[in-house]
Image (cartoon, rainbow, N blue to C red; front, side, top):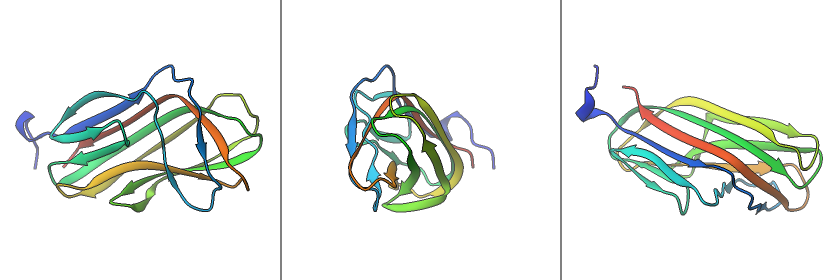
Length: 150
């Protein structure tokens, strides 16, 4: 089934030129990714909350999810997990692991995949790390987009 313009749904949150670091506690559990000064790029048939990084779909279907992050850490040699959650459940097909080898340098992380969503489902991005103490992350640039594909 192909959808026309009236049946489409999409949403986007992005961050540009951020310099504010966010502390992520010890890495035993995922923490919702804070995106300081996030803006809504566009949205149709979705609700976007930049305050808490939620994308809420208003239309059921299969969605393409894409996330891209240019970030730097305040700690050297950290293994970082980035994952998409739907209604507080991790989506294993939308998960990325990256080693940040040097503090203060910008590294890129990307995730993409397809998820089945129902109207009212809440999607967000969360992170964890392998360090024994809190780690500061600065998401200099970020983009989280979803688009209804079927």
